[in-house]
Amino acid sequence: MTTGKKLTAGDAELTVVPQDGCRIASLTVGGTELLRQGDRYGSFTMVPWCGRTENGRFRNGGEVHQLPVDAAPHAIHGTGRHTTWREAPVGTDASAAFYFDLADPWPYPGRVTQSFELAEGELRMTLLVEASGDSFPAQAGWHPWFLRNLGQGGRDAEVDFSPAWQEERGDDHLPTGLRIDPKPGPWDDCFGMPDGVDVSVTWPGELRVRVTSPAEWVVVYDEQPEAVCVEPQSGPPNGLNTLPRLVTPIDPLEITTVWSWERLG
Image (cartoon, rainbow, N blue to C red; front, side, top):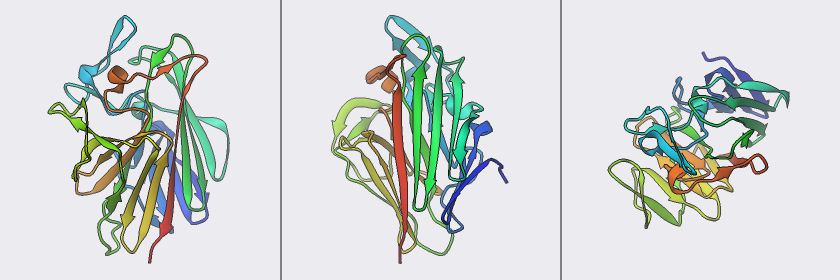
């Protein structure tokens, strides 16, 4: 059983493992596990980029940088998930914060902080990316693996949302730059929600989790039988190249998400 920092509020318990990329290893509500278990699963951060970066390369001004290719031929999901985070000296039984300093293979110095606030009926998370030297493009987001089935004899999860558009996905798994009408799943696709991310994962008759964020991008991935992923993020896949958001010493990148839940039936 993975050990880590445990937060509790009401009948909810959250386990965060800072030495494993500050991954959420477990989220239980009334004793029911909501996340797929395993070292690669739970819920991990995507920082300082989200999804795939084309051929592992991105440009900052006139300088081109090469990132490790770990989803050939691309670099995927950032370095934060492979890093040991440190706990900040703040927190309660229901809140905590962790941080790590950006370092090789990321070419720019900075700091990433993640905070968790667990309450009865919801979890609020915030990611903050700060530059401590030169400005750089960055992204941040979350990659939760919600269980397809809660294992209590109920039906499989249903994903419900109303995006304004879908990013057309090319054969290289990257957005082509075209926005198309949303297509039915299964998905490994990025969607635009300009009024903010709002996606529900419902286990009929059992539980509903609503994932919200002021961010306007979400990737939904449900091509595996064990889980469904709802990933709020600050930009689309390959966004370091196609929609760079510059982080400067006076303008950090901050993104928040709230997971709220209710019992059904």
